[in-house]
Amino acid sequence: MKRNRKENNMIYQKTRDGVILMLVFIVFFTGILSISDGFTAGSSRIVRVREGRHTEEVEKLMGLKVLDTTDTQGIKNLLSSVIDDVFLFRGWNDDKEPFEAAVTEKMLQIKYHVHINRPDSFRRLTGDYSAIILALIPKIHQVQWTYQEMQDGGTLETKNIIYDWKQLKKEIFFDSEAESVVKYSNARDFGATASSLQRLIDQLVYFDEGKIEEKKKPAVKVTEAQMKEEIEALPLTNVRSYNEITKYDNIYVESAGAFDKKEYNRELWDDFYEKVQNGEPASVIVGGYNSLENADLDKNGSVYFCNIHYDGVQFYILYDFIDSKRADDFGEGVVTGKYLLTDSDDTMTCYYVSDDCSVSWRDIGYSVVYSGLHEFTPYESITAYTVMTSWY
Image 1 (cartoon, rainbow, N blue to C red):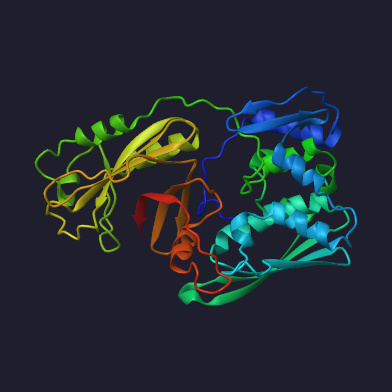
Image 2 (image 1 turned 120 degrees about the horizontal axis):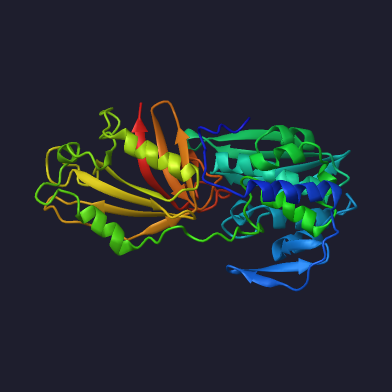
């Protein structure tokens, strides 16, 4: 299943020339850089060794490389380090194995026991996981994933997915900047040294652990006080209703739920979205129907605001839910996230902010509704913030 960019676009940018240059080194000059001691970048220490720069997580993965496919424990250790913790749930009593793995011919078969209530996220991540596995177990050519995922109503559907390196290069598991170089590479090329594995991981779309974070400074400063002032400065001193905000041209107003298809000043949202896709700082105030108050559209308390800013690095969101007495309620204050994602179905398109670029809107709902439904379904929550919903 090819990832639909419309359904899951993300703000995730790198320096194009830098990425291509580094990846060319994988193919032609792997392991020739000579760099000295480590230094701190952000909150994680970056290790510098003779064959190049890589993180401690990647150094650990290289230490788990498996050359003997009969080494069952070695394969298990590698998989447990590659797969995200949430998918390693060991049952309510912590006494179950999350998966079993075996090599047949040149295929690694992974049979999952955990019930997946983030179906889209897991499907996307298995591609990235497989790229790392193929690099670090050079004698295998395919990775097979068999697992049960949640569907509507809490039913389980068995999935069986097989990846090889050729297929991974065709699907969208690598950043677009890397596609031209990855196309001519073999998986084992990226498992040759820690620096080459680092370059592979840095180009994976969904896998985050162990990436070297881009050292990018915010282009503008965003504060909670500033964001509150922008909402309070709206010309709505005496009237706080949904119908009233549709008369103003300085905010985007989304439709009032599934039965009201009209929206106002859409060009403001489109301009904001275009800028942040290009990595430019931008902001917009979104107004919408406050379903928490359940008020008529012309009554006080029928409106909420979402003030969203992008500083060139991350997103800041401040919600203001107006009550029937026209009082502001800023709730928990400003929240943040790295990615602005969008997901669609037959009725609407939802835009949301999260630190996990693999999750779909369906994943977010399922993780709440079906957490702990079965002994092998983990309790989990996904932090994501809705900023705009557009109904068809």
